Length: 90
Image (cartoon, rainbow, N blue to C red; front, side, top):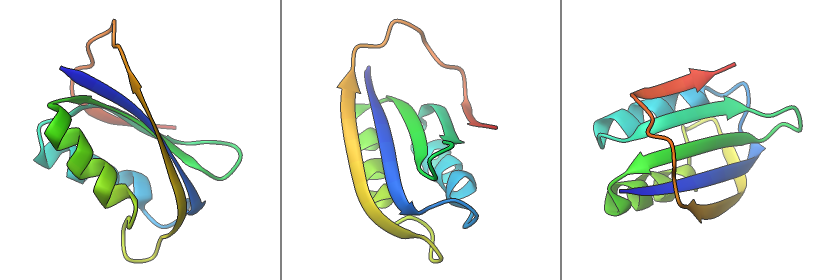
């Protein structure tokens, strides 16, 4: 099992980025969370199959139609906690 922490910058808040990210993660059987950050970016943690995580990261470079992604940074992590489901955090 793999885990990646992803930070997406650009016009990514107020465009349903979190909602669409959750759909993409659930379609691939991933667990974790996505949340808005105070600086206007979106942070997500994906846990599951490495190939599926890579697919969602590729999607994050585009995001939903109304998003304008400027940058996506990824940190692969060793996860000690197992997530159940994929959640949108406030």
